[in-house]
Amino acid sequence: MEQRELAVTARNATGKGVARRLRQEGLIPAVFYGHKMEPMALSLNPTDLKKIISSESGRNTLITLKFEGKKEKDRVALLKELQLAPLKREYLHADLCEVLMDEKINARIPIHFIGKSVGVKEGGIEQHARRELDIRCLPGNLIDFVEVDVTSLAVGDSLHVKDVKVPEGIEVLDPAGDTVVAILAPVAEKIATPEEAAAQLAASLAEPKKEEAAGAKKEEKPAAKK
Image (cartoon, rainbow, N blue to C red; front, side):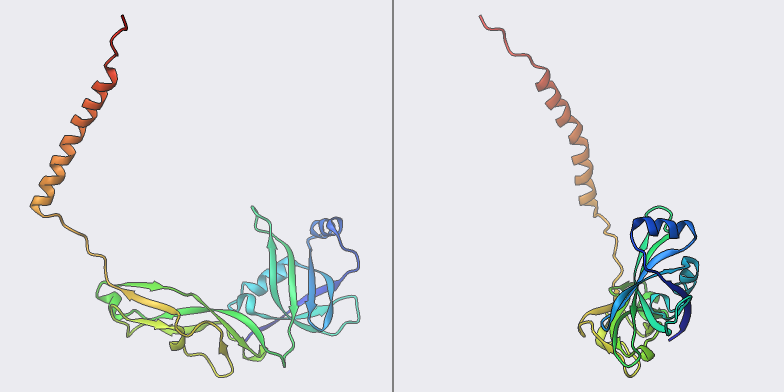
C-alpha cells in the first residue's frame, strides 16, 4: 500500500469565519481524530490532498501527516470524509482518522474485472453486481484493489464474494454468498407471428373509430325542458 506525506498546520481558532479566511488563503480546514486522542483542528492545502487521493490507492492511501510550526510527531491517517462545494466541486473540509500500524482497520477496496468471458463472446451480458469489497486488515496489508478474472465464465455462470481471492491477512466482511458478477443470457427480441401482427393492425385501425364515437356523444346536447 502506497504511503504519501501531507503537510498540515495545527490551529486553535475554529468557526465559519476562520474557515472562510483559510479558503481565501488557498487552504481548507480539517479535523484529525482517533480513538486514543482528542480531535485536532488542522489546515492544509487542498491541491496537495487532491494529488494524494487521485493516486491509484485513492482514499485508501495511507497519509503521513507532517506538522508545520508545531513540535508534533508525524502521524499516519486515512481520509474518512471530504466535503465538496456543490457546483465547483472544490474541497471545503476534510476529516482525517488516525491509523495505528498495529491495529486493524476497516476499508473498502475496488474490484477490477479482467478478461473477456466465454459467455460475452457468445452474446451474453456481463452484469457487475458489486464493484467494491469491504475488508478488514492491518494498515500494512491494505491493498489498492482486488482482481476478479471472468474469462472462464459462460452464460448462466456467476462468481460470489467467497470466490474472490484476497491476499493473506485480509478479511472480507461482505456476505460470502453475495453475487459479484454474473453472465446473463442475451435478451431475444420477440417476433410477432402473422396472426399476432394482423390482430395488432386491426386493433390500431379500430381505435380512431372509438375516439370518433366518443367525441360525437360529447357533442350531443340535452333536449330543452318544456
